[in-house]
Image (cartoon, rainbow, N blue to C red; front, side, top):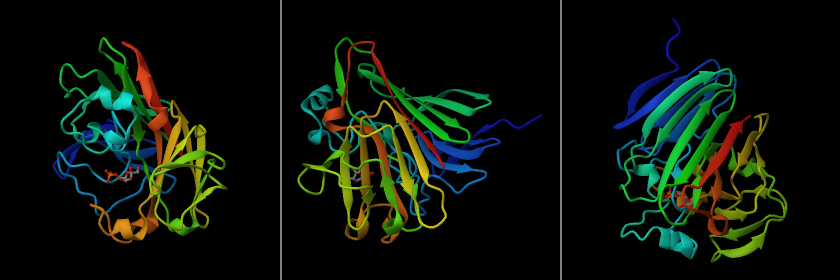
Length: 290
Ligand code: TA6
């Protein structure tokens, strides 16, 4: 009898699921429903491997696809409607989801791959939103974050699938598809600018592109096939590389690690924040392939 494609493991002190099938091997931490590995059997890993990542319960892990929810970035930098939706004393960067334990609720297999669903059930009973993440492991990795408004009032929130991608050399890496797209430059007082040409990297880069397209690609050095990103429900894309100076003080990050990673984050951030009426739902979806 074939072994089950989903098995439970513990990484550090964090429970996780390993999915292995005829297409790929993947790993999902129950903390944050965070995909930390996607390795197609016939290709290079499509998510960055961070040897400095620390797998400790309650501590954000810098690898794979952290889920920024129900706000992206600093809550006080979000639109007022998002801030008033979450009048919390403690507002950690990138929201609450990534340090909470999510509950696996189902898994299934078909000729597209193995799909696992996880739900965040540990929030207070009166919390207005319930998120569910589905992860399909097949020829591509498909991640979909669905948020339902289970309250009696409208709720505004922002979010990002904060994906870390690998490269052999950031200086020979390019994000394609954002030419002429407006962006907020987090490193220049959040000024609104326009992207000239494809995105290349020669310094710290931290930008929220607004109205970004549904398809982007990441060109990589040498003969490495590009990474293709296909999205839906996302109107913004965050592009980040900490470069040399910030790499020196970032947690879980080797000084030289900026040379071998980049974040291209599928988001609905800033002006693209989502407002849900009671019982309404929204899905943010990303497919990663090469
Ligand atoms: O997505 C870009 C960003 O907001 C950067 O400003 C940087 O803070 C990065 O996220 C990582 O955030 P983290 O809280 O995971 O260290």
